[in-house]
Length: 292
Length: 334
Image 1: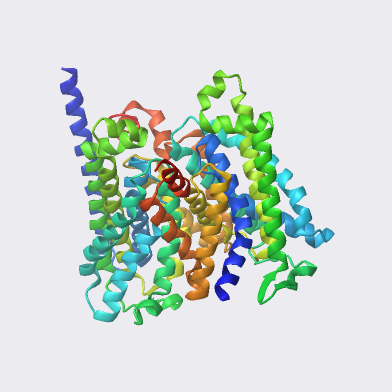
Image 2: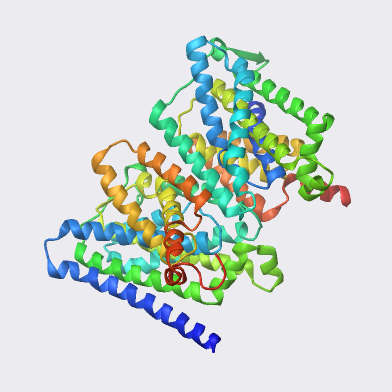
């Protein structure tokens, strides 16, 4: 029974993981850079959500719809001011630049907002749903549903609209897009904005489940999202979703079976194992099956 | 004729730099002899050289090969702990354990590098974020996992005192070794290979450069020197704990110094270390808020990456052609 409960709990967390990782995957797909500032955006968004809750009593699930567009613009601004200028440089440069931006975000938040641990406690935080013997936390279920809605909405946007198709085309071949008359710079900016908006949404959802502070989200969440997109094959929503579940399940089982402190080791070990055994991620595994 | 002159001036440059390193080393070696009670100056010199070792070691993989490591604190802490444990529990002279600590860290680095450096793209950089955190967790939980009392978890270990003057000389020796190594790599085929990987890994591979092997070796050498810095720290300071030795701020510092000083240059990391150690020294005495320096470093890093990717070395190199040839690379940009 504990096993089933751990898996269901993993599924709930996977919604959040998928939301935060897909932004990273989208930006990597379109621009071939790893947005190290992703975790920084999540942290700023978590703070924004916290203050919205504190001052106006807004529920994090409502804040998502305010915070995500806000961080879309923040992301677009970062792209225009910084990332765009180093896109033609070596990959080292963009990596260092985004790392520096993360550093500024973290230090700025710690300096001006204080380094305390905060948490948003909506009225329903204690509520649970019982299905026979299985107990599901109400807030986790809501976060899971919100994550699924966001990802399905995004997938629809990417498949049905012209802009969405342009973004997907850009992920496939930048030069061909230029030849086809797509405004590559504008679409890149929008893609970076959407990626940051997703990180913003994830940051808002995060507050409903976990406590947070300005620095902690960095190492662990950044590494988790990277493990997920490597495992998920870098560019597909179903891959990212499946990988999110795999990681969350591995973490929950580790916590249930061994020591809770080892939770953060899981994502790292999983990352190394994936890089050694199947560098293409889960998607390559499925593809190999299909060919065979 | 021109080729001959080039070769001559190139050799002159190398000799000039070696003389410079040895001159610096002798000057610093004289400090405890001239004034036996210059403890504060000795402390400043130790940390200056210590940071220079860390920065130059990081530069070998991060600057030359362009593989950014955000987890060098793992090797630093590992070196410190190997020496610390052997010194406090088994009474082995810390300076004798230094090469051993270096080799352990180099082996560990190779183990991490083998899967992650094989692949194109930022895999290594991201994996290293985990390396630092995972290694810290491993050392915190070490005693529980193996049922022993060695690392003493988060409380850390206290060490017996050791003669700081001997550590002073040992640090100078390690500094000279790291500088000679970094110049040797820079001047030879090994360095050329790493630069080729930095510029275009696929093209380098096609041209016959064993990209994976060179990078793993560079990482192992880098980890070796980083761990020796850890050993030196354990010999000089009387206390080690996971939060300070494996801390993410240590990793950030090792990235910051070479980038600020001049990525992929021989002297850039030393400039960066001079700046960083003097700022660290001042800041800790003026403000006790640790976030203000972090904010300043972050802004500085953004500015440098955007406008002068070669850092201080790049700025100096703009001045004269001679300075450029001394500091900036001779063969191809890094």
